[in-house]
Length: 250
Image 1 (cartoon, helix red, strand yellow):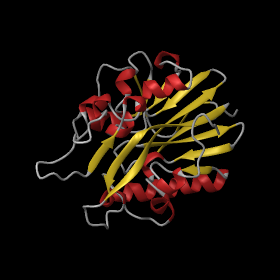
Image 2 (tube, helix red, strand yellow):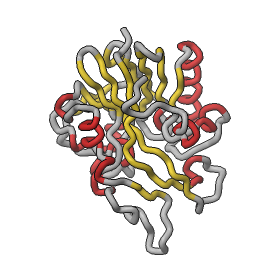
Image 3 (cartoon, helix red, strand yellow):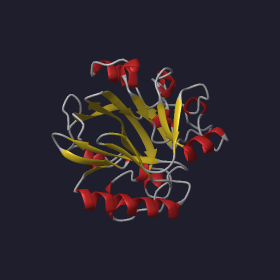
Image 4 (cartoon, helix red, strand yellow):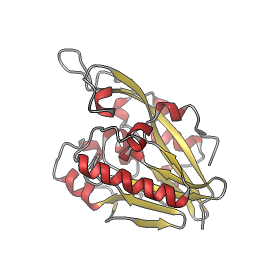
């Protein structure tokens, strides 16, 4: 059964070194990328995918700047870009959600998880274990006191909502397949492909396992081909110009 709708919620932006989008590039040039959350509205209530950057990124563009002045990541966030403000604009509070799908625990995807202390957060076991063992994950993204539902592999979480295990960018990354009433099947790669070049041309990008990333992209391409899904990439600046953004819906 399809969900009622899916909305793209913009949560600020982030300047990212081009070498992270394409590891063949030399470091030094930054690209301004969109940060997204996704709101799924179902007959049984809303579901959220990802929570954006932590509040301490607000007006804090020097957060990751090195002593020599360089930075590979520059968060661009205002007080209006928090996940709670985005939900408020959609008419919801954190406690209204059925659950949060946390695709992976990088700062631009799980930084707002701490706002959901009374909401179930769905995470892959591989991601949970890697983060809790301290493998380079920000503390704000791996709060041990939140309420987690730990899953393994591909799982249908609700009618019309399936997570797909797509490791490589991170240890337990998951993408999301959503069947909507209005727009049909949608495939959210999240960071299994930053942009179209990673997905269609095999452009290598930042991750923990290149071989796993290649396998995950092949898996997503098979899903898209079999379902005819429209594919959303995680941080594609060209696609950003064409997609519907809240209050428009899919």
